[in-house]
Length: 470
Image 1 (cartoon, rainbow, N blue to C red):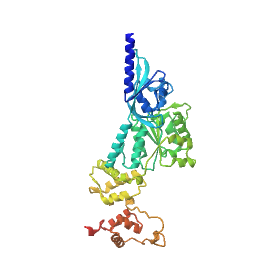
Image 2 (image 1 turned 60 degrees about the vertical axis):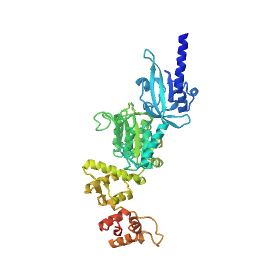
Image 3 (image 1 turned 120 degrees about the vertical axis):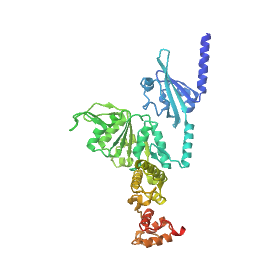
Image 4 (image 1 turned 45 degrees about the vertical axis):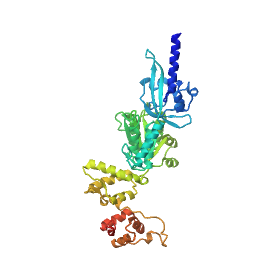
């Protein structure tokens, strides 16, 4: 009797200790049903113990559970195979519908004979920690520090949103579609998601859908068996099989034919593929990330892209802003590319001259970050000093011209009709004097961009600053 009372006393003490813990703790029986639920779990999840007891752990919809959906049978859960899981940051879904950032850990409980009798999981709420991290990041950005992730560089508001989206996408297995103009770095974003996820040790397979002929892309993606078509002399695994448990990145997804779109939809729905010429279905466990420079919604409206596939892909969209919409990132991108080229060429170029940087800041960059990188590489070929100057910049950037649309309010004709027939050195000198050497104002007067004015000043050896100010 005394031993029984002592055991009851120890159990009460243990329960009080668990209930007083800041971390959430819950247990499950061998049927996968919640058997205990402490007070911190009530606070973190919003579910009371009464609501949670007897239900399965998919109640909290954890975003990271061995990279798979929660199985209906506890015996199929990976925790039964691995016996324990590493502590991982993830999200659980609060009863009220919002996500809660947590660190989740789990392990099985065994009896003296080693037989599994249940599972115990701990949940640590890191919401306040993440807020502190974000404040630290914001403070660093306000101090002008370069913010980067896996060679993606920027401190603009748009890029900070991209970094946040990458972290969120990497924390789950959700299907991602990356949209942005050519040259904005869509493959870098896909790579960053993969190498910051649980699949980072697995292959990252890239497929450019626009670069493959339509008659080969099916075999490239799904593989084929010997004799499937002329030239198929052996069995071959496709990219989805090659990825194993890794990630497949499908670039320019909008270029897929309707037939391949149907097959990709099956991959997303059933998680299985069929090689060309074979009826056998093969299960796959890959993450799919897609990208396009086109507006997929417009492609759906035009009948070029399947609506059901569109909604399967856009579970988590990430938009990459064009470089012209984040000009504050240009100086740090230029500095980054100069450092890369210094290492590559052995040169020691310290930066850009003021006029050259203004030229780069004014340009529209239709080719985005890729075009900027190429421009710096071009400049390194020509630059013989310690700083990149205007004449080192590619001619198409130096000579870029933009004419403002619409009529000139001070004249009867169009703006272009009121421009001088030919800009001469003398006319340019007179305009510079009238505009107090303001190159932008001169450009507006003659309908040329400021870089074009710089180009002519260099050509005619006109001082870039008013000689009278020296």
